Image (cartoon, rainbow, N blue to C red; front, side, top):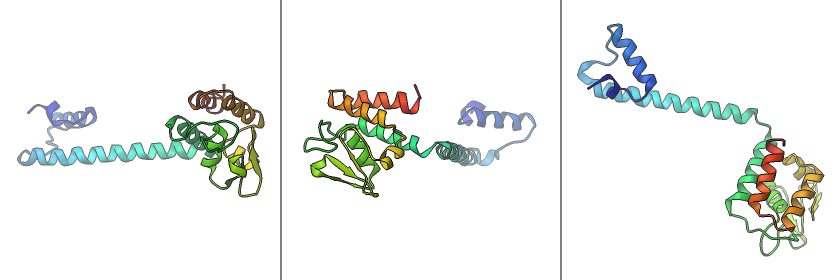
Length: 172
């Protein structure tokens, strides 16, 4: 069995090579496979834990509204919500702003889905969102109006998601 066959990755190969060049046998010959497999599993568990820590560090550095916007974009692209016009949430589906209200989740749709009342009893409706829902997604009144118009003029959820991604997340 060659060194390369014993190593699961370049890092392990480097460690194995370094030890053997120094005359140290990293794993006893009598149980090379067992010790190596245990070392490999430990190495991968450590790498996975490191990657998880890096992800959570990145997530903690990201402003909360960006996380919410990413969830909104994913929801619009998911196919979970049927698209409709004229109402935030109508019998046939949702406006893109209605999907935002649904994800905000701290209120309820009223007036047959034409309006959304948040926890402070502020209303969202038509082309505008309440202050709380807007802040949740870092959405200006102008952007809210633009997205509502795009929805009612026939732009798909995917096209609207692209605009949200370009303008809110990438700042273009």
